[in-house]
Every structure is written in structure tokens, then in C-alpha cells.
Length: 91
Image 1 (cartoon, one colour):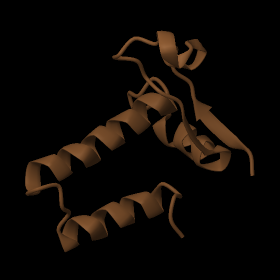
Image 2 (image 1 turned 30 degrees about the horizontal axis):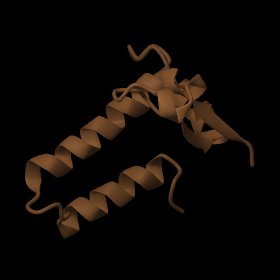
Image 3 (image 1 turned 180 degrees about the vertical axis):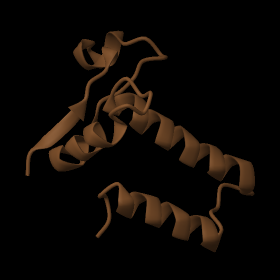
């Protein structure tokens, strides 16, 4: 299976010279990337990367807002697994 890459400004910068606030590259399956492209048509997102960053920030924000000591509740774990399954990461 071929992977898509979410390219970043840091991708071409050697790690030793990369600024502290750089972005990183995340690889996802191409079929998932293609589904996201279709999903975001006329949605207001400029790119699949913008959508993916939005979803991940939302997920992390939900975790940070409702957890103590960095642990997920059983309901949060079910919600995360459902979201990851819907994004194609889990079977």
C-alpha cells in the first residue's frame, strides 16, 4: 500500500538546523488521504492537511479538557477508537 505524506516546512531542513517550532511529516495511507480530499470538498478546509490538523487538535483538546493525570476515561477511549476507525486507522 502506498502512503501519502503530509509535507511540512521542516521536511527539507536537517534536524540539527531545524528551528524549535517546526512542523513534522506524518504518513497516512493514500486511500485515506483520497477520502479526506473528497470529504473536504466545499467544506471550508483548504487542504487535507488543514482538516487533519483540525481533527487532531480537537481530539487532543477533548483529552486535555476532561482528563486528570493524562489518562483517558473508558468513554473517551471508545470515542477515540471510533474516530480512528472512521479515519481508517483501525479495523
